[in-house]
Length: 355
Ligand code: MRU
Image (tube, rainbow, N blue to C red; front, side, top):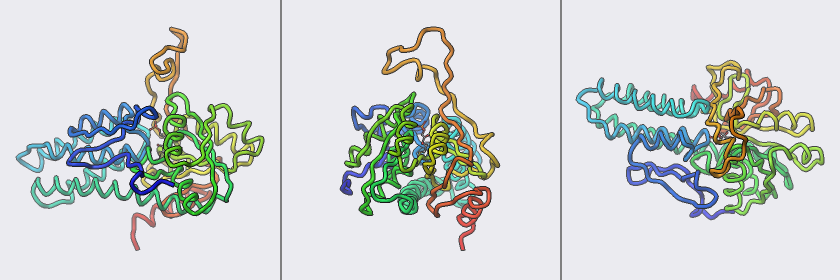
């Protein structure tokens, strides 16, 4: 296991700047970017320098704190107006992960709540962003603890995309479950779908697990069925970008196919996510906005065209897995099972109204 010094922190606040691991450089180079301008943070989210639902939420919160610091305003109203514009830029950066909207709304809520002057509001915004960051770390450990109970010694876990330290502030959601189980002394190995077209599974999941000496094998996305048929996968754990009130879950494109395969082969399919990923406003997954990205992600590999010119390409970044394919959802408050419209609601209400 990693020593404390080496634990990856994907997003942090260092010397008044937002520090991000540049995920577009991995696995070749581990480099950090220190961003002092909120516009660069928004751009980093758009271009996937930072990606993964919780990581982009926290980055947006820190980016807004940065933006607030730079505002010279004479009144609360003009300060708020400028903050609304900054918030809008962050909201427009990526549409699917609800954590981004959750974080932006929480930051805007601070402006309403703080009664002091503009300096007080700016300080409170930094405090709030750091609270969101801290909660992410805590939530991931708790998700790990609850999820670990589902894993037995010797399990092989299949995952899709990257729901690890690199997709969060640190530790990860799906990979947090694996990390926690290993800390408890279980022998766990991971099979990572490469995750076309951006290869987050191969480039990021495999890299971060290898850093921690956690056994991992990379497969192409079309190889999972054979492994399941041969009984070589004990369960699937994936992250989530948005979970509707009925449990329908948006996650990286290809997650739905893995869930279908898992059900056919009777392999448990788990979603691991903090409650900030649950969108109770959406009764089902049918209205989750699905990002479509540039077709160059499909047609080119490392800058080299691999597709014929002129042939149409479709490149949705996410899909929605229907709730009936999900065995359980692992959150920081516990593991819930169907019917999700009842069990998730109870959990969310428990968080909203502290006892
Ligand atoms: O397009 P990405 O790389 O941001 O997509 C990331 C995923 O789909 C993750 O699985 C999801 O955000 C959960 S991260 C804990």
